[in-house]
Length: 132
Ligand SMILES: [Zn+2]
Image (cartoon, rainbow, N blue to C red; front, side):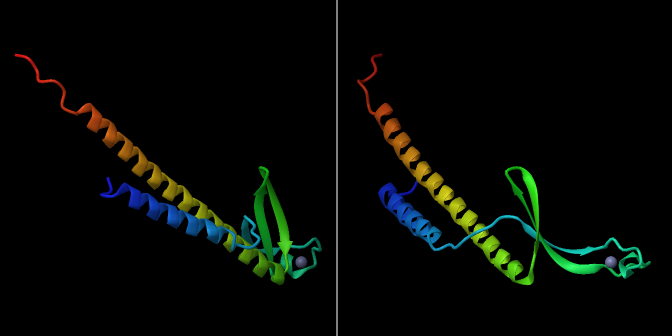
């Protein structure tokens, strides 16, 4: 257990505060992944049906699970950079939230150890001398 639980808790609280404030700096976010796709069209005379095929694209496609359903959206080049930025924001958000959970777990550990130590101190306090 830390030598000084009070100071350790203060340190954890300050770190938690600092990390939590970073959350407010994050911009819009979006989850999912972006894939590059090549495709084949419907007209049989097109080069995309040749062997080897000259496929159309590449196209950018964003895929994500929204309420359990996979959603797919075609993206323009501008949208791709915006989506990438928003996906980065989401990643940062997750990282910070994870850190907040870790810091809380550490604080919990400090508090539980401190409580257990003071409890065992009571238990092991000298009782009346044993008779023989
Ligand atoms: Zn084609």
